[in-house]
Amino acid sequence: MQALETALSARADMFEFDVRRCGDGSLVVHHDPEIASRSLAMFDYSAADDAARQLGYRLPRLKDVLRVARGRIQLDVELKQDGYEHVVIEEVVQSGFDLESFVVTSFERNAVAALRAAHPELKTGLLVYDVSGTEALQMFEQAGASFLGPDYRILDETTLREAEAAGIGLLPWTVNDPVAIRRLLGFTAVTGVITDNPAAAVRIRDGEHA
Image (cartoon, rainbow, N blue to C red; front, side, top):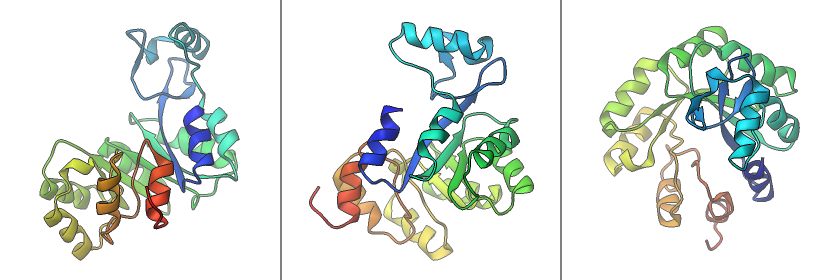
């Protein structure tokens, strides 16, 4: 929730976060699959939140993030697993977001395919890492996603130029170095960057000094 407030204060265009499921089906915002070395699938929400508190933080539910973000910022919703795509989309839409105000991304190609089949008008992104730039572009073509979300470290100039020529939109992650942000935003294929430092990225995007 602090990260969301930071993004809002920085005037970021979107807020990126990860969605997982607890054992009782509760949708929560959490990067790792475990809390205190136990899978989230082993907890109901209350127990998972208690475990998180013992580690010094609260475990936000998806609806908590949606409530604060609604009408203030667009969303980049990352699905860390497949099989619950429709539940996530339903909750986001029922919270007041139309399909133009959020995108859904995943490393799981099954999740991307399920989303494209059920909601062809929804923008989806395939996340990739630990492959070459050429392999990443091939994976994107096979997945049928709307855009590609690569680890920025695989984006050499050849890959960036190939993406431009093919009309493939890129949303690289996680780009915290101002020099790298400035370089990437100089390519038309790059529609934005995912960063832990949105204030600096916004300044660079707007042509101000970082």
